[in-house]
Image 1 (cartoon, helix red, strand yellow):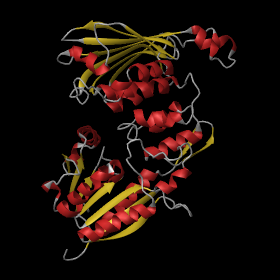
Image 2: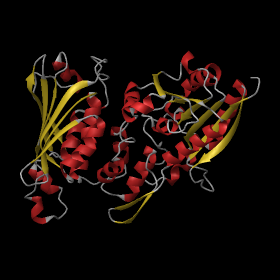
Image 3: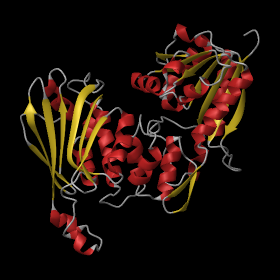
Image 4: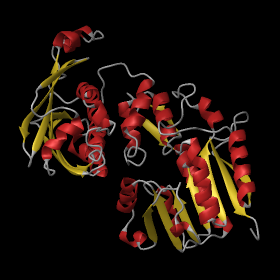
Length: 443
C-alpha cells in the first residue's frame, strides 16, 4: 500500500528535514505488518514528494489471524490504506507528527501547501463520508470510486502544518476502513486524543470518528468523548443506535453563559477561547454588546474565525495574546472567562496569569472552570492517575481549587463563590468545578 506526500513550498526539499528522512536516501524500517519503505520520487527546490510504501508480510498476517478461514489467505489488507498504514505512519514519522524539527525549528509551525495521494483507500460510507471527515480540517477532497467497490482513489490538497496533516491521516485511515488489524485496548483512547489534539474536539463527526477508531467499544468511546469535553453523555440501547444527550461541555458553556447573564456584564472577554465554542453562544445574546476572544494559538483563532459567519465576526474581535503576560487591550471588560484554561499551564506560570487577569485586566467578574480530578475515577477507560486531556499540566481536587481561588481572591480584592457543573457525585462532587470571582466594591 502506498501513500505519497507532496509540497511545493519554497525550498521544497526542506520536507526532508520535517520528516527526518533524507531525500537522497531510500530507507526501510521494520514494522509490525512487515516493512515500511521511505523514498522520494521527486526532490527539487520547486517540488518535493515523499513516498511511504508498506510491504505487508503475508505470513505475519496469517500468523495474527483469529480463525477467519479463507479470509486469512485472500483479503485486501496488503493493498489498501488501512490501520496497518496508519501504524507504519506513526512509527516512521513519529517525530514529525509531534511537530519537532531540531535542525530547522521554524519549519513545524509553518502552514505548507500539501498534496496527499492514496491510490486505494477503503471508504465504508463512500466519497461523501471521506468529505465529511477531511473537509472540516481544511482539506480539499477528490475521492474517485475504484470501479464497483468500496475503495476510492483519494487525493487531498490543503495548506496545513505537516504535523496536523500526518495526525489527520493517522486517525482517519482506520476510521475510513472501520476496522483495525490489532486488538483495541484502553491505550487507544490516549492515542486518539494525542493525535486528535487541537482538532478532534471541534470536528462535526467526532462521535463517528471516536466510535470507529475505538472499534465501537462503548466504554472506550464514552471515555474518549468525555475527555474531549464535547459529546460525553450518551447511551447505546441497540447496536449502532446512539441517543445524544447534553454533553458536559455544553453544560459547562450553559453554566458560564448563565453566570454572565446574571452578572449584568455587557463587555465580555473569553480568555483562551480556542476554536470559539463559547463565542458562538455569546454572539447570539444581545445582552453582550462587545465580545473579545483571546488565545495564544493563531491556528485556534483561524478556526474560530472560519466557524463564525461574517455577521457574527462584526460583533466579535479575535486577538492573539498570551495570558501570562500583561496586555493593556484586555482591561476595561465587565467580565472575563477562563473556561478549562488554567489546567493547561505549568503551575509555576499560574502567578503570571493571576497578575495578568486579576491585577492588570481586572474585570468586575471572572469565571474560572476546571476539571475536578476526584471525579476521574468515574470515567471508564481513564487509567488511574491519568488526566482527562494529554495537554493538562495538573488537575485539582475540590480542596485544591478552593485554596487557590481563595488565595487569589484575597490577594486581588475579590470575593469568590463555587458552583457545580454537571451532575454531582454524592462522594466525589461534580465533574467540572466553577469559581465565580466578583470584585469587591472600592477595590
